[in-house]
Image (cartoon, rainbow, N blue to C red; front, side, top):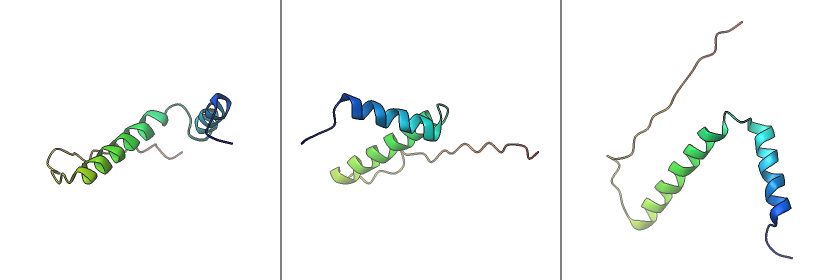
Length: 64
């Protein structure tokens, strides 16, 4: 018993698409990439925070 096979990975991807929708996936991946980068930087002992920017986009939908 070991590891994830192709059917399991496909099932996980489909579940994520259903939960978050196609429009949210790029935002989630961007956030995940930032988190991984910060984690790697912390492991390497780099504390340069001048290059990291905290940009958030807030789009308020009109209330109906």
